[in-house]
Length: 446
Image (cartoon, rainbow, N blue to C red; front, side, top):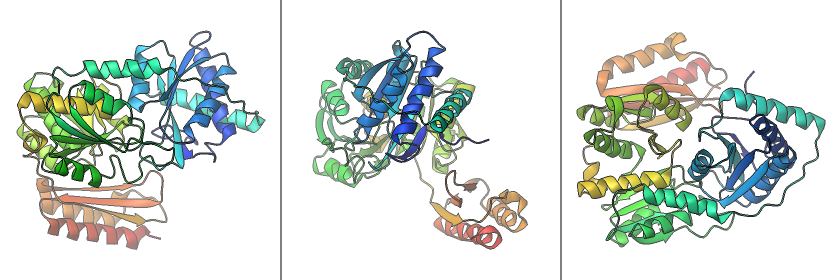
């Protein structure tokens, strides 16, 4: 039976509504407390949150459930998701809980759980916790929130770790930062100022409801303008929980996760720190990245969409670098999750060591034209088992050869088929996207 609560990135929903209503959140705390108690008496659990107005009460409900089972809770207050992962891994915490819905609007929230390893919990452990949550909900357990006080030293520990990561300083660098009114709003400006950069900080005034609103990693127009107006060397934007980062070069060019993987992969290989000459990316990474890495003698391995799958493949292959086009980048030697702040530190270090800007570091990345079409479907079938659809996919693949690719998949959350075609020219992209999408509509569309 499939999971009812846990997705690939924890439990998500609208704050105050199932499964993020008070009773279910409290039951989660109870279930996690029982799970943690099996690893020792009075286990210590870390909780952190982003800046959403619902973060505090959700954290208090989780803590109430944990304490009802004898667990001790440390509260980091507002901190990034990778900050929670780092502190859980390096501290005495049995588990870490992050209250965040990442890039979603403020009405949404979520609960992510990390084990002491710094990795998200294995599926079997999530299943055990979920089954207990559902059982507790049937018993109608009364939720009792706990009082929490922020331990400021926790965020300071994470900041000191980030400050120790680069081998160079950023003295003389002009930097524009967009914190998305999210979890990085204090950490990011202090980090880069202490590294010596001249910082222009934007979207650092969270009010509980403006997280990700026309700012941050999904909305780069204001950051781009700030880079151009201020003649900045770099611009960087973080999403709500700062596990991803997007960049703007001095020229105003947008530098996404694919471009970061190219710059970092090349630098790591030249330094002898890219085991197997492998970079792990997802099916959504542009074909241009694959071609550019090939020219450097680097093989790109693709996974399904999701940083969870990227990390699993990195672990399997022993790869040092992986990530997503959306800005999740994992440096496995330093972190167990995507970390926007760490990615920025590493990328700026690469640029300083090369004596170049992001324009020069990514100049040879040719982005192939790409088009994505969504089709609402009435049923899900294997596309290659439907003759009319399979014929169109095969025709596109044969005609494009290694100059393009076709990706046809279902949405994980909606009754949608997604058709993505990428090719060396726009005409092929438009023609084959239309033909495959039309075939899906005829055969299985609503």
